[in-house]
Each structure stands twice: as C-alpha cells, then as structure tokens.
Length: 271
Length: 262
Image 1 (tube, rainbow over the protein chains, first blue to last red):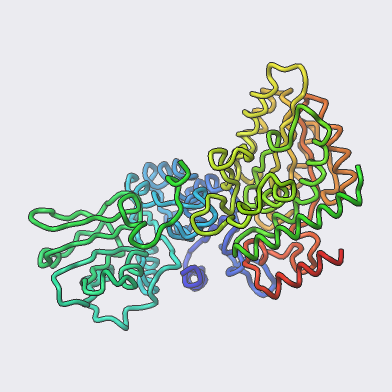
Image 2: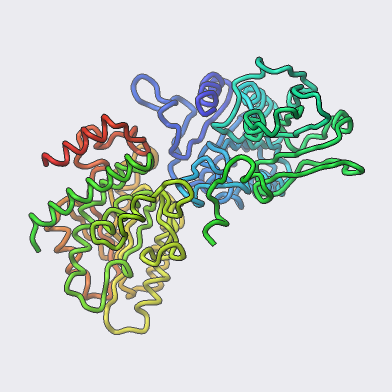
C-alpha cells in the first residue's frame, strides 16, 4: 500500500498538497536529480515537531498536509500534538501511518501500535480510515483531501488488490458485502482483518461485511444474520452494534484476534 | 592494547552480524556495522577493571544497531549459541531492537524507539554516581540522527543540572540523516557548553585511548565518533537501501568474503 500512497501523493502535489515524511519512504519522492519533489519535506526523526509544524502549515485552510511515518511514532509519540493540533485547535491534518499494528513484528513492541485506532478515537474531529484494498485506500485518500476534518489512514501490507474475484455488493463507498456462504453467519471486518477473514478456512462459509471506516453506522442487513463475528485489528472494540438477541463475538487484539490470525509478539508478551 | 587483536575481533563480530542477519531475515546491518569498532574498543577498556563491567555500564540508545551488541555478547559468550540462534525467530523475545532487562539482565534498557535511551542514561548515571566520590562511568551510544528527537536535547539540558554524574555520551556520527535535518554542525557547537571530543569512529587505537581516558573523571562528556554507515562494505557504505534490507544468499556470501579479505 505504501507504493499506492506514494503515487497518489505525487499525482496531487500540484493541488496544494504538502507531504511531511518522518525519514521514511523518501526514495519514492525523489526526482531524477535525487532531490525531493516540491512540497515534500523529509522532517527527520522528530514526530512531535513534525505534527506541530504541520499544524502551522494547516493554518492556511487551502492546504492539505499529510504526515507520514511509522505508526507508534506518529500516533503515540506525537499524541499530545495531535490532540492539540487536530482536536483542540481544529486544524486539519491527514495522518498516514506506514504500517498495521504488528507488521514490524520482529522489531518488537517499540515498533508496534495496536492502540492507534483506540487512541485517535478519543480525539474529536478525526475520521479513521482502515482501507482493506487498493481501491479503499484511494477512496480514503480522496475523501480525506476533500473533508474539512482531520483523518487517520492506516496503511497495511495485508490487503486485497480488489474485489473482482468475489461476489460483492457495495452498500456505500466504504461499506462492502461479500457473499460467500449459504449459512446465516456474518463476519464484520475492517482494515487488515478482511485479508485474514478471506484467507481463513474458518470463515469460508461466512458472508463478510467490510467497513473502511469502523465508526460508520452498520447497515440494517446485519440483523438478518444469526451469528456475527466482529474482527477489529486494534486493542478495544469501537464498532457499535445493537446486541439484542444476537450471537455476537468480538475479536480484537486484546481478545483472541491474535490467536485467530496467528500469534504476533506484542507488548504483553514481555511482562 | 593490541590493535591487531582488536581488528580481528571486529572482523569476527561483523561476521556474526552477517550470520545473524541472514539466518533471521532481519536486522539493520549497516547501522550495526557503523558501531563495531566503538563497541570493541570500549569493551577492551573494561578488561582489568575489577569493579566495573561493560554490560552494567553500557546502554545502546540507538536500538536498531542491536545486532552489533548481540554479536559482541556472543563473541564474549555472554549470550550462548542457543539464544543467539533464536534471535528474531518466531516468538523469540530477543527481537530486532534491544531486549528489556526483564528478558535478559545483560541489557540495561530495552531501546528501539529513538530518543529514549539517552534520557534514561542520565537517570541511570545519576543513580550510580551522585553519592560516590569515585567515577563509575555510564556509556550511552546514540545515533546522530537520533538527535533529531527533542528528548535528546532535553537530556542535554538535564546534564547542566547534573554536571558530574560520569555520563559519557558516544555519538555514532555517520551523517545518514543529514538528508533530513542537518544536525552535525549543531552538535559540533556543543563544544562551547560541554566537554566534547571528536574521534575517528573506526580507528581502534584512538577510540581506545579516548574511552580509556574518560574513565577516571566524573565530568560528563560527549564523544563524537565519525563513522560510516555500513563500514567497511563497499556496496553498503552510505547507501540508504541497506538501512533495513534483508540479506540474500548472494549478498551474504559476497559480504562474508569481503570481510574475510580485509
């Protein structure tokens, strides 16, 4: 997904877009003279200053500012700066993290961020996008550019290129339903959990409802299903569902999701 | 100090780094290579010092260079071969950054995110030295790019508050992040405020002499070591592609050969 992200940015640089990089992904933004493209800055390894600097740029409402680096540094290290810049001062930033929660698994917990979605969910004025496919990513970026609110977009290397191989209907740009089974079971996924559900034998006869924006309201069709499994690739659940009379199981990184996909070494393993 | 012996030790450690990187499919090889002489020379300074040892006195703040530290510890048999073979394998707590003290007491602080080891070291050095008349130096190795992080400058301000805690800050200055934020001139001007020394980071003799002379004084010091990222491999030196690149068999054999023929 990082490749797609870089290409999208390069196509939109002339449209008042600034890209601030935390010393990653730099190579994709170099011209033939090995110089960074106009409006792209390598801000180095200082995430807190990067986010505040971005806020200063964003005071010009005509500009779109993207901040991009590895997720724990972008979200956790610069959390106060995000809270004050985006939440309190209501300046619009587009935060794009380079990886899903455990994608740097063997580098250890300093490079993991399973709490990213939950932390940002506490800050007002930020839309959260967890794209599951290449198209989802492009739609998320386009939406983030147009929106007046700040956005967080999580890139992942566990995604599907498209939905062409599946019997899929689109409920909205960010909600898709994949018909697979004859049973009355539904898996609700977002971000990289779609990839896991599609590749897991356990979910072979589940229909899948995929949300790009996990805070979106679920469509009514979920009530047609007998069994619901909700797979959320972050620490605590944020997907809301009316639980009356339903067999609902929620899987988050805190509750069984790690077992379901495979075990990822995480912070709790070092206690 | 036997320079020839230390030179051979450096070769052995680089070989171990390559072995580890190839078998694990992980590792920041170039960053690890740039600090090998620093570790070898510093470790040598601790020999014959009865009450001080390397592993209680050294903090690697530049955590992604941990393969160099793992390899030094393997070479010294502080890490046995069984553990060494497990590094960065599935479910191993010996990860691609410094493990925590709870995983292994031979590591004082589990760094990985940059800019954390240095402020920790200030507190650690204070704890070791503030009541003692004698110097028990604490050496912390920081990357020059790591000084982009504000917490590093906060640490330097703390040193003004705690001037004689025998903290020796070794800066691995390989200039790899000058493309982002030029910092080296800024660091050089610290000589106006702190006891600051410049040294060739790949010259074992001068490194040894500088580190050795720092032991007896409680004064805090900054030692800027001029290094090359990826030294001495021709393909790797100052080549950003090698920051976090997996080794193929072809590259593994080529680099091993190059080390052998040094």
